[in-house]
Image (cartoon, rainbow, N blue to C red):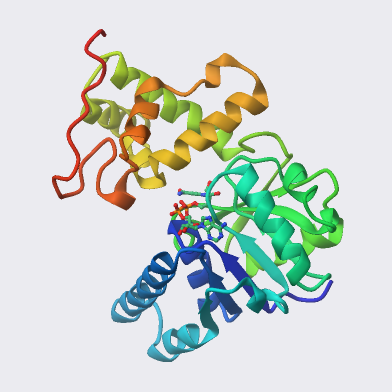
Length: 297
Ligand SMILES: NC(=O)c1ccc[n+]([C@@H]2O[C@H](COP(=O)([O-])OP(=O)(O)OC[C@H]3O[C@@H](n4cnc5c(N)ncnc54)[C@H](O)[C@@H]3O)[C@@H](O)[C@H]2O)c1
């Protein structure tokens, strides 16, 4: 397997747009696709304004910034991914939807290309089983936001080859990341530990142990976390947190991973976190009504 020079990123949300930016700034040729045209234009606008900010702050030269933007192309057609060396998938956290995408890509993308999933929790082995190239499927789990966070968690599926692992590791390091390796169990390393904490913070709020501010301050000032667990859940997206917790619950089969009803309630009410202006906290606008934790408790 040769060096990776071109990347196709699927999903232009929080993660996909950040991964595309990171790859373009590091000199790779990038295609970015999203099935929703509004999300795709939003992603392109966000990337160019973030690159402009990096230039203004002196973190990137004007030339490097312009080069990064030239390296990046968006497309509404997956057919444009035919020649990429690696696809990085960052779409919704649903096994069914991700498998459907991999089946589609398998027919389009050249046979030597790697399929990497940015999934937070879903089995790489099962995603790989949807393709005709299971030895070339791997988990490449970036943290949020990808241009800033230093870590990439790499997950080998049951059939991932050594070549695929080495090429993915080399790419992550070229993007300036420190890698850690996890076996293919639900939630891998980071979310196996983080999500039960976030879920427990929701239980503490739900059962009236404390206010959201005190829960977050407790963990920030008492345990030196840079963000409290509820703030962090808003940052990740409450829908994404709920999907991950459900995968832990189903995959590890222990009731201790059952999602807190308050988290479910917030997601049902459309409170997704920072990305749509309201989650546990409000970030402006009055579209949504306050949902109080259950009065029975
Ligand atoms: N949010 C985080 O903090 C975080 C961190 C690490 C990993 N992840 C993982 O990254 C993935 C994406 O998360 P996100 O937070 O960026 O979500 P998001 O909701 O911000 O973005 C998802 C994007 O995918 C697009 N999409 C959905 N289905 C599609 C399809 N079939 N084809 C093309 N585009 C499609 C949507 O239009 C949307 O723009 C998930 O698997 C998530 O678990 C998220």
